[in-house]
Length: 302
Length: 113
Image 1: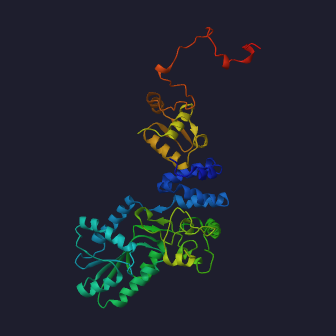
Image 2: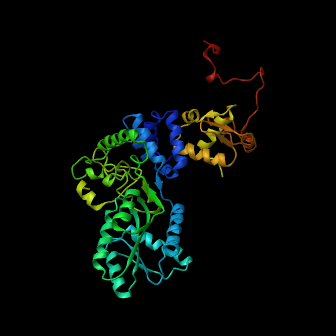
Image 3: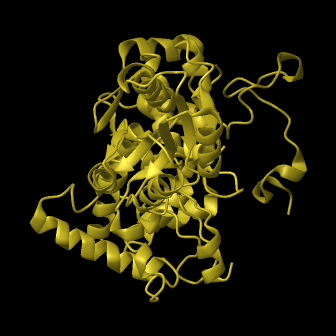
């Protein structure tokens, strides 16, 4: 049974030469999740105006960080080892807090909950878990749990976490310590939290910017320009004033990361070429990743 | 596990080439997607039936033997007379043996004008 329809295949067959095929096979061996996304992968490669653009897409995808359940368990265990052995915190004084703010379900809560099994195995099953920042304050006030570990799935620029930390510091009256655990994050965002907020951070998957911090400087500028051209062409309305901030990923984070393999929403720090909801014609796009973001959808009129 | 139809076609191409085939050549000959080709390579590499070295796919000696023993070659699908059951076959006329023709199906040069 073909994973791509015959009609689509014939469309692409003529464009596939020996070198291209070898690149795709290599990509599949490094990133097997793409096998199920073949149609979308061939689509993005076909929309590249020249081979140079295709080369860039291949380079970015071969280094992609796609979280599968195996990798997730590995990272979970590292986080739990940090919490139970390295943080220096005491089980009776600790609260593990998801960085969710409002009543919407949030990936930070999902990560927090998934740690429970590993925590139990390390005899920390009874540690207090808290499902949002507001309840963190209440928990401190009611039980005096002053060793706070903030848990989140992904850190981009670090501004969200910074806001949370400032909120806690403003609203808790008393002595307390904050540390942070994230599943993944961009290195400049993580450093920002460490330096500007003065907190210890543990993050098993730290990402560099996909172009700027991954290519030599002279090539990086050129590759950035190619990506921006591709975005202009393929991402509906991204050049509009209020959407430019998404170019190269929110705040130019240039992230190559997704936890779709464990049912998480892809962060907007990721290159939008991989997840932008509308294609060049303003129709619903079919991309290798997807992301739901309420405000963005409203702005685009979806 | 029983090989799929396209896998049999790929294996047949490999069987009939002495020195293996370039990946791209195989891809051109059999109409499949890159993902199908990748999964085929992984599956038969794991079973020791083929070797793959970035550019070329070759049948291993073990693979060749497996194919002969297990008849992994695809029979010629167009030859619909290849498998007629014995009880439907009539008397076979030998070469140069006389027989009575069907007049309506013979050429007009044999007919009375």
